[in-house]
Amino acid sequence: MTAPAPVSQAKIPQITVLDTGGQYCHLIARRVRELGVYSEVRPSETPATELEGSKGLIISGGPSSVYDPASPSVDPAIFRSGQSVLGICYGQQLMAHLLGGDVRPGAKGEFGFATLELDGGGNRTPLFEGLPARQQIWMSHRDTVAGMPPGFSQLGTTSTCAIAAMAAPERGLYSVQFHPEVVHTTEGRRILANFLFDVCGCVKDWDPRHRIPLVEQQIRETVGARNVFFFVSGGVDSTVAYTLCLRALGEARVRGVYVDTGLMREGETDFVRAMFNSLGAAGTVSIESAAEQFLTPLAGVRDPETKRQIIGEEFVRVQERIIEARHLLDGHWILGQGTIYPDTIESGGTEKAATIKTHHNRVAGIQRLLQDKRIVEPLSSFYKDEVREIGRELGLPDELLDRHPFPGPGLAIRCLGAERNEPLERVTDGFIVPVRSVGVQGDSRSYAPVLALDLFPGTDGRLQAEATELINRMQGINRVMARVASHAPLASLAVHASSLTAGRLERLRRADAIVRRISHESGFDKTIWQFPVVLIPLGTDAAPDSVVLRPVHSVDGMTAQSVGMEAPLLNAMAAELLTVEGVCGVFYDLTHKPPATIEWE
Ligand code: XMP
Image (cartoon, rainbow, N blue to C red; front, side, top):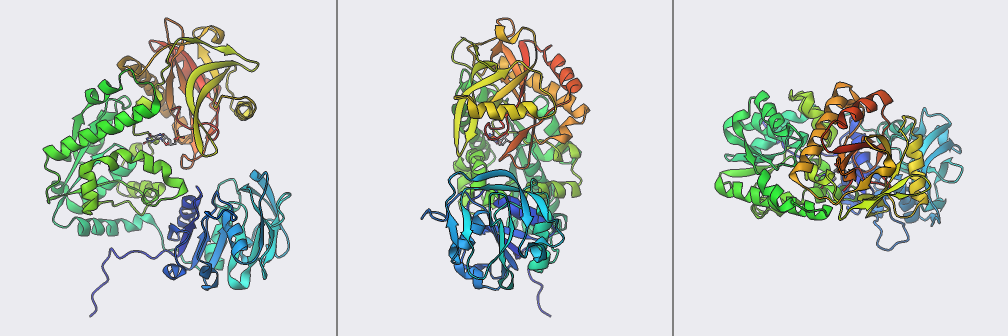
């Protein structure tokens, strides 16, 4: 009898996504998995010989131009490997370039919605099987394919892009200039499914819930006879990872520490305590109160990056103190982390993850554990949605699994300060408010004042569209907000010199709790992705601050849309917010990302 293969044997992806640095590569792999096919992301230049196990390859879109010598490429042998290949956006251009076609640098580019018209062999190709002759697609490219490589035929066009899709079907090569992985391409899911099942012959082999026994087995193999400790955050990833370890190893061998930074939302520590209680694991998690340690060095600080740095450094100190005091570096212990798949690979879409994690990475003790491979990351092959599915299967409460993302530095980066007292400046469309908030245009971040409109925000997206126009037109602002309600007219308000203080944090905490309660009771929170509540030093001498509401739709935080809220709900929220001591006004952020970020700092 032959011995069974170890259960932790790596799974071979049927589809490998070759990452050319675009923000969409993880989205592609996620969409493929949603269709029930296991998929992984690899660097674009991975040699063809290492990709042989996959049935199909997808070359992702990227920000580069094939004419830039530093731009990513692929091993041309993949086109002769017999595997089917789908090039998306930059992937199409790369395919054309490497196979003898002609790519033209575009001066202006095409960004946003377009209509794809299937022509040539388009409606007969398996890629577009069952699709209407005209469909909405989403474009984001500068260069275009002007001449197809020999043997390719054109499948579809748009009004501005002659070769919006092309193929050499007998060689299994397909490409599209648009993005089938984004929701704005209405038939995108169908196109990807056609590629997987009709072109590549994939079979369904992926359901993250079925992986639970295997993951538990992997935990036991990695941990061996040792014990696991976690720094838990109360977020989805670390809680699911912790629960898996508890199941795999038993309560006696798993310990967690939750650090209360004093920068958390109202009731957060109680929530974490109650949650681990309900999991029957209360005895395994301890709470480290470190509010003083964070708030003291933060007092008076205004600069956002300095705040993040201080918080990161204090985190390091707390973690080192705990590691030292509990002798966690001795051989009996191994570190558990809730790292998820996108955090494990470097790509254009994951630079944020790298920044978010700096405070963990910098801890010397943790570095040593990493070097010695004394670390267990049970979720490192899963996407966020998959982690939620696993959590649900494990019986974790919806209240935890449906939580919106919350930034590591907590309320500190939602409590804005100002250097000095300053009046508002009246301009044609509203008032310039001299508080500095973050914007992203292109790849760079900038800090700039905010434009306040003296208009009540509606739900039809009209003001949001106007906000985008205003930012494009006006110099020096990257965010627009509308006045919902205030104790005094907008024209009479001013910005007040202020910084991060315990009092203002408490004010923000109150406001945030009100917003969360009302948005939960009304069900609004279920309709959105995240709902930051921000305190800005705009008001009167008697009530120096205002609250800004920032509900957004998003898929992964990379881009986001400002969401409208029905007037009765918004009015109810504003009325209660105006009862908070020190709050003068309530505003509504109208800006999409880009041009603004989700957070204000
Ligand atoms: P931005 O503001 O860049 O945010 O549009 C995108 C997503 O990232 C979160 N975010 C952070 N998370 N530490 C974190 O752990 C941070 O410093 C940080 N800054 C932003 C933000 O809440 C949003 O979900």
